[in-house]
Length: 393
Image (spheres, rainbow, N blue to C red):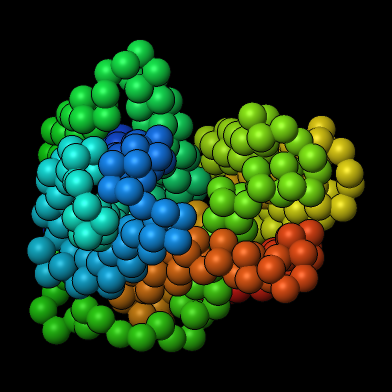
């Protein structure tokens, strides 16, 4: 059996039960996506505790929070190089160890500098895992002979929902922040222990490039991911602000906008592989992008709380399958080895998560928040057409 895994054309010995092996790797890949979503979601409920513990004001908190994204961005290209040299399993195992070690520190770091350093390492672990799990997912999907990427990404969302709910529940019953992080760390370790044996360990052949600037279609794939992640980041950081400040929704209820978006995205990703298989990748991206754009316009321009929730749900449904399809394309293109292409696409996409909310804030400061959302909606419509037009040999 010949498999192209972790960025390489690689001949491996035929397994006695390839169907069983493939099934094991598919389940293990879903677990790999669950782990970083589950781990990072526990941080959101801990932010107020960290702010109070270290005596941070809003400006300093913003600087400290940047360390999380900075660590991820720095780690992603390095993770791709290490996966090519040592295999996906080894790199993912190291990232899990870093998550398990840093999670309790998030609950106990006493100073702004300490919190920033812990977030830098924690973000690096999350970013490296995000990169390498997608390299593995591309190989597993290709060998399965059918679309699977949307389903893999759904488990990241499931992990995030589970982690946030678990920590919120523990804190609400008085468990304390340290115990909550220890429970999450134990969960991460348990999921890893069960799935580790089916994470892929093949390495790229000697002489294959381990780092390069994005080229050709990889740049276009990265642009589509950048704008899609920008929209997702805007939902996370600005949907509640918009509902409260523009629509006049009470602060206690403003968070339902992101809930509508997140639940719709998770459900759509669980069904996404069937949709992509039925519609085709190009049509799925085109319809998804236009649907997300329409949802943004609807939520922004129609002065109704119910319509806004519906619009945010449409954004979640529309965005759900765009990035998974782009990762599949990155694995199929031949312009660059996938061990280089996947980290490049992941890094460009994650830059959208970081720069998107900041861009929305900048535009809102100079014009208004509705104007910023209209521009985001227009960008989504543009990448819908761009993404649908991409072809790989």
